[in-house]
Image (cartoon, rainbow over all chains, first blue to last red; front, side, top):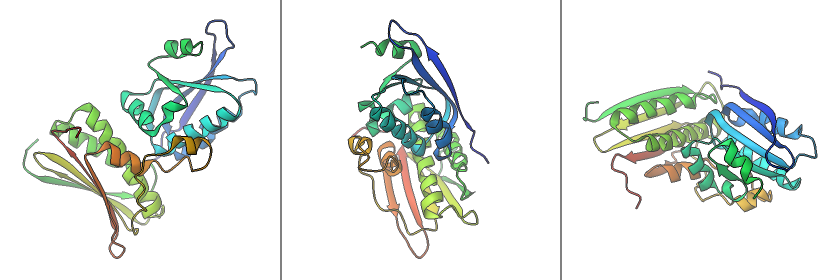
Length: 121
Length: 146
């Protein structure tokens, strides 16, 4: 049995008058095998990127090793003064992210529109 | 499903990804027993994490060793034991300190046992260096938040 590969699609969306928002759209599984996809994609972002949105709406399986990769991305983002917001998590994983404390460093939103608007706050 | 006690056993190879078989079997069983979707999601994460610990730390990714999963059903609860050949994990069910992780004072990983402890009604880890070790998890049909 193989894990479903982690797919990450990069998008840019405009929202209000600020700089474009870079969206990392994850799909498939996020596990210990996802490091190249998750952190590799993040590391390729241009240095001027300041607003990052994580889209989990097509993630099928997420485990603690995958959550650790998201924490590692947040550590790197914090060093570059980047702001990360999140949407598309199931209610279960919203609960898990809250339990782990990740919500101290990223906000969780029900959908892309709400998350984009929140960058203006 | 018949309300009498019954047992389901699985033997999984120690290969990451196979935890999904235990996770999905437990989810199907819990659904037949009448657990809510929310409790089933809790159980899926807890069992996946227990199996990953057994595969990675207990059996050290040795694919010649199997991870045992025993689901025991009764009228009031579902018990799951995840067995490996290791000497048992170090107990680390404390809540993660996200500030220390963000400041790289502790590893980003190491969330599994905390999640297991938090998501099921009962969790314990039994170390038996001679015969192997197991994680035991129970969820009750009539869950209380006490």
